[in-house]
Image: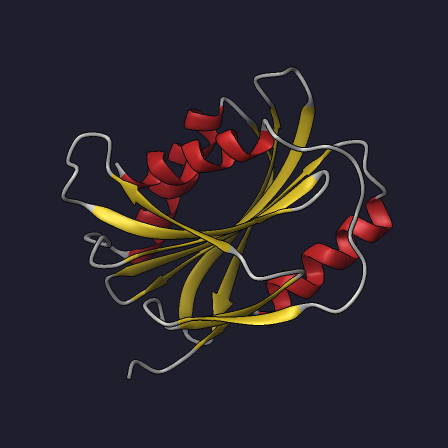
Length: 177
């Protein structure tokens, strides 16, 4: 269920992109409610997302849509109810199925001692434009963190790879207050 929300959010963001890659100083964004910090080109927009089947279940989505690409960070609390690797398989499958995308590659990763995955996939936006996405998902106790970078396929590969690397490598968990 929450896996589907994550995938739907990525699909919706791809519909609005134009071309280009932003350069310049990035900002450190610290989410007060989700215990993480990350570098982004600018302060992200917050959207409270309700589950399609139960409006009482909500989570926060932070996104920064730039020209031709977007950054999406989502945090789901108290959702992991199976072993981490099994849960990550389910999330991966849910993302790919909901996006009607094609899995390009998958890598088992870690965030400290926390299990994670990085998946790369291709998808086509509703307007027919082809996109490439990379999503890193981490299981941290009963929580799931998701970081996505989605770009139009024909953008400059070096500039977008640099932006994605800067974004993904900057993600840090912060202690609960």
